[in-house]
Length: 497
Image 1 (tube, rainbow, N blue to C red):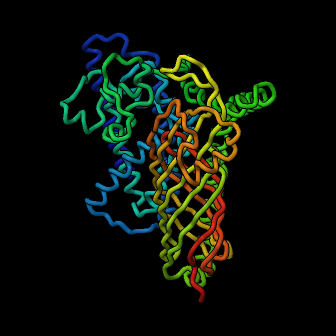
Image 2 (cartoon, rainbow, N blue to C red):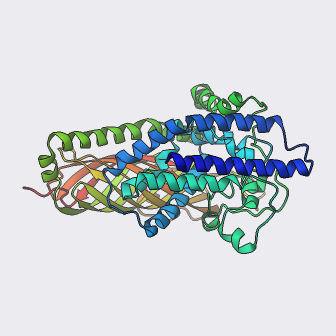
Image 3 (cartoon, rainbow, N blue to C red):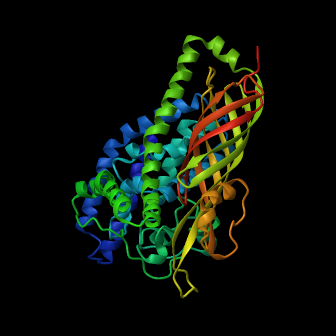
């Protein structure tokens, strides 16, 4: 592992020296800047801290790997699968890091430079591990990919991206540009031009961007940086700016904004604004506090049971079972309904299902093609298809934790107002479907992919009819969602002995 990392650093330094020599020969005076010096300082600090972060991440993956669903082995086919799994997971993470302020507070460090060269690749936050980027990869050791394999493939993907940070290479042959991430694609990703923002998120492959609608070709010259510049070349300021802004806004700005809108805005406007404000707060609380605590508690309990009473543990969760669940609940986007089919082998299980939530509220309509301004009802309908895998513990509550992949369709719609049925419309839309109103003023759909994480407890698990309760977070590429659910279960989880 250490030799691999030394080779990694050697290749990066070689690329940097090569680009520097070429620019020196070409007499590009704007290449050697104070910005580059800041990048090098940040890069050296990152190397010094890398061993600590690697040990932590490897330890977490290793712990999850103990509960793996499969043992994949060390053959070339598994390495290829690991490559594609890592690249797709990086795409998920990268999109979410641009869409949510928590992850952007750290990822913005990499984008904050207004120059673009190999040294820009060194400009990575020292706090990425604390930020929790590794959460997105937890499903891989749980599925059965070995932690060392995951870390190795991830580092190779990061090494690949180093050479993308250059203006010396224009465009490569079309087949390469179509499949792989290239300097041209990555220049677009670092640009602040309106048509380039949040585009080209892939690591090694650009095909994910083409599939999910985040691809943009380099047409006009990119303008590098972020929309809110750091305005400092001090490396410590560069590293801290995003985090300081996030917490200052979280602690003061958001709460004051919510209080102000509750007191002084009209009810409809206050509700709409409060919805947007609370969404990020709810996601932050769920991801940073609730879910990690539940995961830690569940895995700790699993370790304790295995160590103190392995026979009883395996006895209670032996065999297989199939059951279905129908759940209703509340999410940060309104009333939610979810159905799933589950299959358990000992203490591991897989789950597949569909969920739908719907939110509607009154607002002001200013649509393209409609010159008049009128009141309308805004609708957000979310339909998500998911597949997850996880572990389940024995006991009276049979707690479980799962992680997987989801494909979600967001439908945004504006209709003429029908205030008399507004309170019933949410339930109707969620459970039954349909517009609920005849006159649709505006509508559009967005597809997203995500990583659902769910914690659930199961009551009366030895009976054919039982009850469930749980919380769920879906870190998707459009609007991360969370929900609290109660439901009915059909089928025994644990057979009577």
